[in-house]
Length: 111
Length: 117
Image (cartoon, rainbow over all chains, first blue to last red; front, side, top):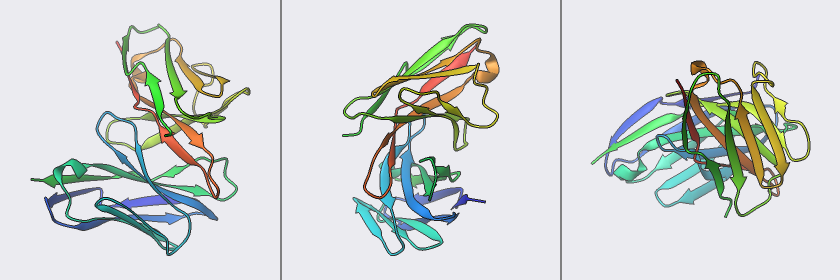
C-alpha cells in the first residue's frame, strides 16, 4: 500500500538553529515527491517537486533532497517567519494525478 | 503564475441550507481540479476529482448527492454543500492541476472555512 510518513510531528527550534524534516515513502513507481508549506487557516503553498533519487532543490533557507526511500527538507538558519506546517506528498506511477499526503510537520521557530 | 482563488473565504450558514464554493484558476487553464477537506490539526483529505466537461470522481465515503461538483469551464469548479449540517463544518480547499514534463503539480486555493449552525 502506498504510504507517506512525516517526522517529527512537531519541531521547535531557536532562530538560527538549522535542522531537517523527514518524509519517508513507500509507493509503486514514484512520479514525483512534493513539499508544501501551510500556514494556519490558509491553503498549502507549493515549494518543491523532486522526481528522482539524488535530486536536490533549494529556495532561500530551504533545501529538499530525495533518495529512493525518503526526502529531507533542510532548513538553514531559520527565522520566525519560517514557522508553518510542512506537508509532503507523493504521486505514484499510473495514478490519476492524485497525491498521497503525509500528516505534516509543524515547525515553530522561536525568536 | 499558477494562482488559484476561492470564494468565499468564510461562510456561516444555518443547518439545512446549501452553500456554494467557487474555485478559479486565475492565470492558467485547469482541466482537472481537486476538492479537499481538512479538519483541525489533520492533513488534507481528498473528496473528489473534478474534470472539465465531465462528471466528478468522488472518493470512497464521500456522498455525491451532498457534495455537488461542477467543472463547467477550464478555469472554474464549484462545490455545493447541499442541506448542510453542523458536521459539514470544516475547511474546504481546492487545487488545480498544472501539467508538467515529468509530472503534474497541484496549486492550492486559500481555502473556505464553512461553519454550519
